[in-house]
Image (cartoon, rainbow over all chains, first blue to last red; front, top):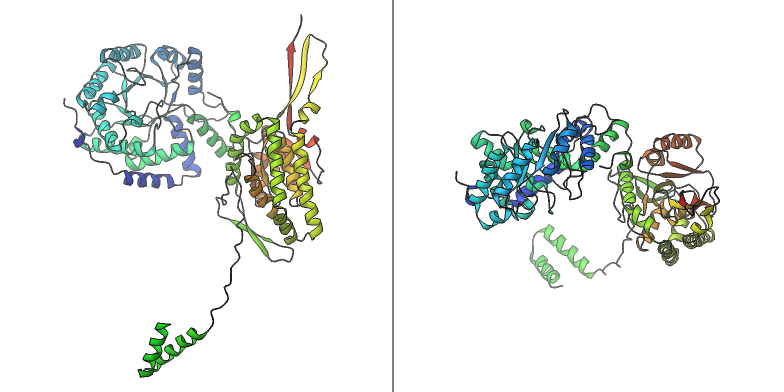
Length: 299
Length: 317
C-alpha cells in the first residue's frame, strides 16, 4: 500500500478551528446532563502511569484504583483501561483479573520511537504476549518530518500486524509535528495504515493534547469514515486534568463525530489526575458541597 | 469663524425662513462664550479581590450600599458561591508558598501593608466618614488598623518561640511540640469597625502562614474592598488574601461547608447562623472560631488557627 501524500489531506484553517473550539467551550452542561457526562468521562479514562520510577507496587495500587475509584460513590463506572509500560503488563493483568478493565501497553520505544523497526516489533509482540489488550505505539516523528512518509506508513502496518488481536493506538505526538496541516496528514496516514485509534500525545512533550489538535483529528476520523465506512477511535492524552475540560472534549466529540463515538469503545482520555477531579465533581453534585483533594486517593 | 460668516452672508440672500433661523442660531453660538469645562468625577468600581486580581463577580449581580445619609455610596459585587470556589482554589494554591515563607518575610510583608495603608490613610478616613463615622473617630480607626498590622508583623517571628514547647516525657525521647498553620481559613467579618474589624480578623490568620478568604461586612464593605488595593501593592503573594463582598446569608453556608477550607472564623452573634456554621463545619471537622464581639489584637488569635505538631525523637538508650 502507498502512504498518502501531504496534498492528499485537506488543508486546515487554523482560525476556523480556533473559533469552532471556542464555541464548544461555551456550551453549558448542567445538572443531570453533567452527571451523565462525568460518568461517561470516568468510563473513558485510560488510567496511566508511565514513569521511570514505576514499580510493581505502584501498578498494583493503580489497578486497585481503576477497579474501585471511590467507595463512597455508588453506581459509578470503572475506568476503561490501565496504561503502563510493557514491563508492567503482567503485573497489571494479574491485578485487574476479571474486572473487565483492559490493559494498555505503550510500545515501540515509547516515548521517542527512536529504535530500529525490528526492536519495536519485538516490543509489541512481547507486550501482547504478556497479555496487553491494547498497544499504544508512537510514530517516528523524525522520519515523518523528513518526508519519509512511506517508511512511517509501513512501520504502522507492520505494528498492526504484530498486534494480532490487540487494538492498536497510534500516537502522533502532535506537539512535535508543528502545524495542524501535518496533524491532519499524519492522522490520515495512521488510519490508512490500519490504526484502531489515533492518539494525540505521549504526555512527555508540551503541548500535549489541546482542543484544536483534537478537533482536527476528529475531523480526519469523520472524513475517513465517510470515505471508507470504518470507524476509528480517538484518544487525547496529556494535559486534561479537569472535569470541566473533559466535558468540553465530549461536547466536541458529540458535535463532530456524533452519538456513535460516545463510548469507551471509541473515545478515551489518557490521564492520571483527571479521574480524581471527576470524582470530586460527582461528589459535589451529590452533596452540594465543594470538595477537597484531601479526601480522594492520591494516585 | 469663517463658516459662521458664510452662513450669515447666505442668510441675507436666502428667502427660506428656516435657513434664516438656523443661520441666526449659529451666529448666536459664535458670539457666546464657551462654557467652563465641567469635569465628571471618576467613581471607583468596587470589585472582588481573588488570586491577586480584581474581577467582577462571575454572577454579574450587585447590591447597593447606602452611605450615612441614605444616598447611594456604591454598587458592590454580590459574590456568588462560584466566586468563593475560585477564591478557595487561589488560597489553596498560595498556601504552600506562604506557609513555607520565612517568618521574617511574612513579618516584612505585613509591615509593608502597614506602610502602604499609612500612605493611603486619607482615603480610608474619607470612606469611613462617608459611612457616618465622625472625622476624629475615623482617623483613630485608621491609625489603630495600621498599629494592628505592625503588631502582628512583629509577632510573625515570635509566636513560634513563645507557644512551642519541649515536653517532659517518661521515656528516652526528646519530645517537642511546634505550631503549623491549619491551611485555608474562611473569615466572615463583623459589622463593627469596617476597617479595623476586618484587619483584626485577617491579620492573625495570615501572620501565622495561613491563607484566607474574607467576606467584607455586608452593611459596610467599602473599606475592606479598598484594602485589597493596599494588599495588592504590598508584596502579599496572589491568593494569600482574597476578599469578597456580598450577602452574608447567601455565602455563610458556603464558607462553612467547603471541604477544602480548614478553619472558619465567624464574627457575629446570630445564634442560628452559629448553629448552621457548626453543623456545616462538621463535614470535614473544620476548626470553628466564633467571635461574638470584636477582640483586641493578641497572639492567641494567631494560635487559634495553628495546629500543634508533636514529635517523639528517640535519644540515648
